[in-house]
Length: 99
Length: 234
Image (cartoon, rainbow over all chains, first blue to last red):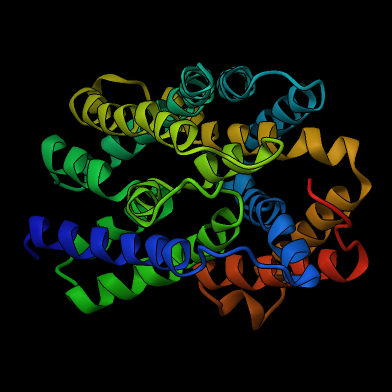
């Protein structure tokens, strides 16, 4: 497969998915259920994408669990996004050194 | 004056996302090169696509000479969640945001940019949205390029550790609101339970990850809307 052609096809597909709803629904949605639904979408997406996928994001489930624990604790303490991400990476790295 | 403040806020929120993106796209660049794609091609893909899961999934298809239709379908399934996010974001922009602005904002409506944009009180201006995109796009592309060139110089242990970076960002986005608001906590918990069910339940585990994200999101956000309808602007 020509990689440039592949990139073009991927970029177009992804752009259309993002662009169409944003452009088509430019008027305010007033329906209370739909408004509430859209309000909860980000939390539902992030919860779904994080667990259980996070356990398979490193070379062992144990190190991933260490990273998750460390990240979740700092996020609970409302630390900055970068600090949470970097601390999780360091926790995984240290854990894998010990294993 | 307010415009300047909005740009500053956008850039500031973009720094955190950009730094997280650098580490994730660094991992993507390394993986692309390890399957035989040049760092420049990988960086071009990052610049034009701005989608982590979709890009990772495309690599085997590209190197194994899959069809373009298959590639487009894979992207559609993995990235269809963005349609929900764009729909949600469409309600978050103030009335000065034109169609033309929306065409630009759509380009980088990623998981994290969307989450940052949603987390703010009130409506968002185009200045905030544009400023928010800049650093993540640059860092996502630059990280891919660096990862591609540095590839083999990094020890395996460090490469493995970088894999968790994107989830660290996710945690930082959804844990604080879940801590403060019970209804958000319930939606997140329900989404996590469903996602685990789809992962381990025989039969359900055959469904591709892109569809799982869509199904779980629809159910969890739908449950939230039924049990905890939003009263007023928030």
